[in-house]
Amino acid sequence: MTMSLNESQDIQTLLQVASHQLTQHGLTDSPRLDAELLLSQALNVSRTYLFTWPEKVPSSEQFKKFPPLLAQRLQGQPIAHILGEREFWGLPLKVTQDTLIPRPDTETLVETTLTLITKEAPKFFPPPYPTLLDLGTGSGAIALALKSEHPQLAITAVDQSTEALKIAQHNADTHQLTIQFLQSNWFSALKRPHIHFDYIVSNPPYIEEQDPHLTQGDVRFEPRSALTSGEDGLDDIRQITQQAGAHLTPQGWLIIEHGYHQADAVAKLFQINGFANIQLQHDLAGQPRVTIGQRL
Image (tube, rainbow, N blue to C red):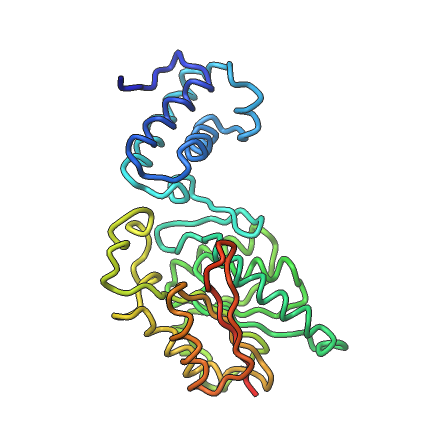
């Protein structure tokens, strides 16, 4: 039997119907959560409100906002784009189709960088404080997460997309965090004179251009330029590893996120470009996710 929405239903029933429809379409691994987020948006209430008042029937005015939101999700639109927001490292961030949607896996990159900064803290006392470059900042997620943990960090964040930089600046302003944003194709805006950083971090595009997953799920709605990187997915990582050394201080670190199956290839790129102390970090699922290397 097909379950459908109607305005006489209470919150509990609306969530059940929406969850059922999302499950039937097979679009999400978290149909109940998606339903809760969409209904919260439609009613302009918190998820806690939904749990507290499951028997409450929304007003007609409130209800009519819900079906269009659910319809967008059933058509495959990412939940982050429908809501216009995604939380990363505890920070609500504005996202649009001009930016990559921040992933939980990328928190491994943040954790790895924070561990390095903490370990090397004595090196930066007394000041000057450490400097950091975020390559391909997108929504600003990585830079803002790091700045929120270490306000003394002097962070420069670059992206080739002016639209993405507008979103990143909006997010920085929202959280009152100071980041220098620059339009740059990787290091292009930093060449003359060379600017040196203690840490360079990046979550670059690393998906193969012909990867069949590009036709599935949320990635269909994200900028292809933020996802793919040549036939083997390594074109941008090659460029970054080749050029990063010239922009790092002595003993500076390069920290890069990559695909779980690319760990060996990325480690080799670090090696042939003169990095030492190369280490691999795993994500919460136990998959190889981040490689770091030090300029000597």
